[in-house]
Length: 202
Image (cartoon, rainbow, N blue to C red):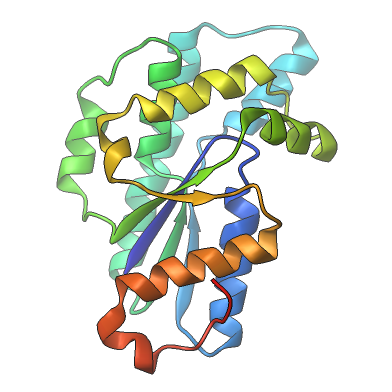
């Protein structure tokens, strides 16, 4: 089973994914965490230090190249793993970023989504951009503005795939969010629930 986590920066994707994987592993479940990053954070920090902002098309080309490579490699790894695979980010994230920048969907990303194995669910972590921005400022590793986050949130909501995403409130602390995600997974596998580790507290 492949579960994909999406959401704007500061929604807690990476923290929640790690907490979920740790909880499943602690209960004896087979689980693999795969990160489909695009190097966006590193690019943002570097651009801020240099005082520049690369053109949208240049930034997208670099990010898309890294994202596509990671997604392809991680789907290959997932195909060889027998258990739960949690993917932190996916091609949907790049499509949302392209929407944010007014670049359109293009042909490559939709084609790849059509050809790659569909995840069991795409879980979108919903959070107010203001709270997400507060989290980002608190950790001090990113350079995202509130306007960037608002635009990114809008970009996700404009995706035609967004209506099929499972939405989870991500304004709660990471441990509680991980439990909510565990509840989503249990609902997706009712036939095997009895054989899976019990993760209490939806």
